[in-house]
Amino acid sequence: MVSRRSFLIFSVLKLSIAMKPGFVKGIILGAVALVLILSMFNIDRGLADIRIGRARFFVEIADEPEEYSRGLSGREKLAANKGMLFIFSQPGNYGFWMKEMKFPLDFVWIKGDQVVGLTENTPPPQFTTYDVVNLPLYYPPEAVDKVLEVNAGAVEKFKIKIGDLVKLKR
Image (tube, rainbow, N blue to C red; front, top):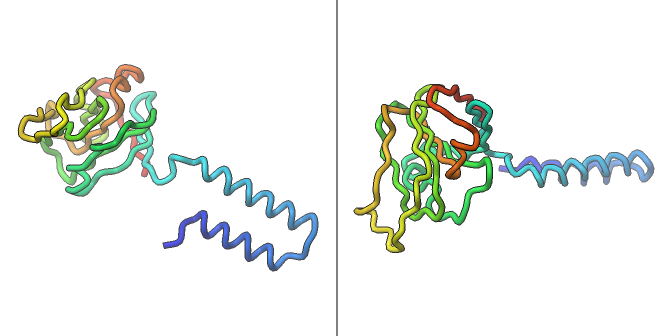
């Protein structure tokens, strides 16, 4: 599959070959170059947009079993206003662990389009062997169909609370 950026570059090259030299060619090439440069700084491309109250996060979507298990494990950090949204096909009391996590998280438990629970400042494991048998599991207060993992402190910072409406844009 050809990326949008590759397609634009190819189109610019095709255009520059077809056009005669001159002012118009310079303007068009300059404009396209500007668009390409600006698109490089769009770090949120490919991420879903989730809003809860006044909070806005750009999230990776986990909706397959292997993604559920891996989650954010092994990452050094999570950028501000980023996260991972776990989407399940049906509501359930899904347990979450902090396997191979290197930073603390907040969990936002979501059912439908509403926050139904919060688990804040969940610490990463204190041991280095990542013995999964001894890892604590964190559960929602009721069946949920989505779970949002964000940096610890985000729930407090954005004053996310039970009952808040959730808007997801993919």
